[in-house]
Amino acid sequence: MNIFPSPTQRLYPFNFYSMMRKKHPIEYDEENDVYGIFRYNDISKCFTDFKNFSSDFPKWFNSTNTISSKKFQDASPIGPSLITSDPPKHRNLRNNISEAFNPRQISILEPKIEKITHDLLEKVIQNKNMDLIEDLAYPLPVIIIAELLGIPNEDHHKFKRWADQIISLSINTNRNPPEEVYENNYKLKQEMNSYFSSIIDIKKRDPKNDLISGLIKSSVLNVNNNDEPNDVTKKGGLTQIQQQQKKDSFVLSQEDIFSFCNLLILAGHVTTVNLIGNIFLSLFENPKQLKLLHSRPLDYIKSTIEETLRYRSPVQILSRVVANDIEIGNGKEKVQLKKGKRVILWIGSANRDETIFPNADQFDITRNPNNHIGFGAGIHLCIGAPLARLEAQVVLKVLLKMLKDIELDTTKADSVVPVNSMFIHGIEHLPITFELYNN
Image (cartoon, rainbow, N blue to C red; front, side, top):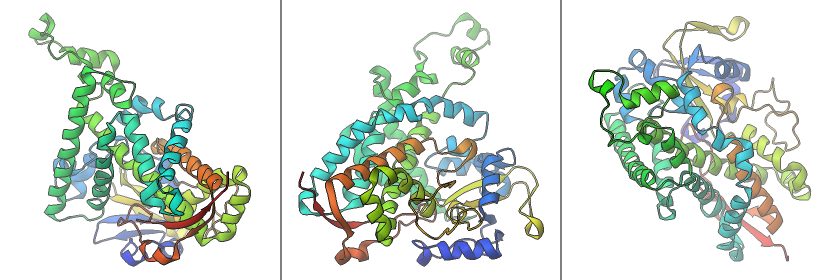
């Protein structure tokens, strides 16, 4: 059975999810050799049980796919990373950037995010109309992520193109994708790695207070390559790098740095863009909620973001590989999953599960509690979640303070089309009109 909604349901897949939760909560898709899981409790179990549900896809790909593991790794634009690793490597990788993304550190960025938001709005605000995606939701996170990494302003435009290509070239759904998919992904990966290699070379010579410079300090690149081998090395003992690895227990490779940078381009940019767009699309479809938010922004900005993460989760799918034979589900609906099989975890469905969320198909910014899994759960809980939340909070605060009568521009409503992705839920454009407060 096909576990994927049709392309025509991409913007509104929720009836499909409802049917799957009720009739096929755990279903095998023979064509793609993958299981789909649709209920909240089953998906939460997969997220929190990393011993039985692995994220280390390259390790398992030989037994689950006709292509080789090496070919899969070579063609993956992101490469081995936080989202494709298990402990202990996952823990070591996460520890290297966790400080930069903890809520306390991220909160320091609020004035900068607010200034960038104001600057972007000033370019279009007098027109009393704009494309919320193109004019604000897209450029804001690009600028922030680029500044965190220490990327020159003139190169920011590369990020959107790369992120769009990563989404459109995804190879995770089909068991045997066309050879062209691998070729295009490989070219993209080479382009991105070549760019970041040149950035790394610059920062090795002139380190700054940015994420890439910090990663270099924790990597093999911090070892002086011009050092002569010592006597121990000449006699077949540990090399200088091996000695440092033994001392520090874990040292980043250059490939690890590439993967961090490539992952942040996708996760740090795409999630926030679509979160902001989905917030306003949901509010326009529920005008009473927009009116309530406008009347009491301090009370409901944060809860509006959380409800959007539930109601229109920017990431609809995450995937795992079954690491051990295991049974999942309840009662007669229990299914035996075989080791080596891939599972698709439908976050978008879990967050509409009526057994967990009362009136699940209603957009309710007063919802409490709201235990959504829009950013995942367990050890792979999205490390960039605090930044995405803060950027969305600032955008809502600034727009509600500066603009009134914010509405969807119905003369351009045909441009509100879904992002061309099975995994990412959002819209390409969101044209709006508004009036200005006389401050």
